[in-house]
Amino acid sequence: MIEKSVVVELESGLQARLAAEFVQKANGYVSEVFLEKDGRRVNAKSIMGLMSLAITSGEPITIIANGKDDETAVNELTNFVKN
Image (cartoon, rainbow, N blue to C red; front, side, top):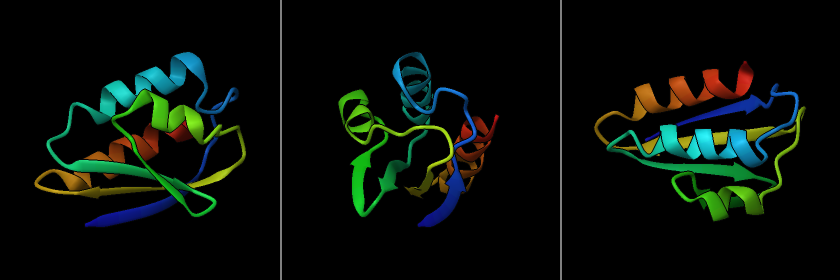
């Protein structure tokens, strides 16, 4: 299992279109992928779970992955929220 904390740098945070893109990317990995904010952990492959966190720009989150491609998943999803 790999965890990485990151500050969301996307101008609109992980809302609407960008949340859908994040979920689509997360679904491309074999590993289980989770997102954590303020002690709440959700499945990053679920748009409803991700939207329930209401992640805005400048907020710290933790990306967690467990499985065969966990390191790749965490690194690529971290890059997504930083760009």
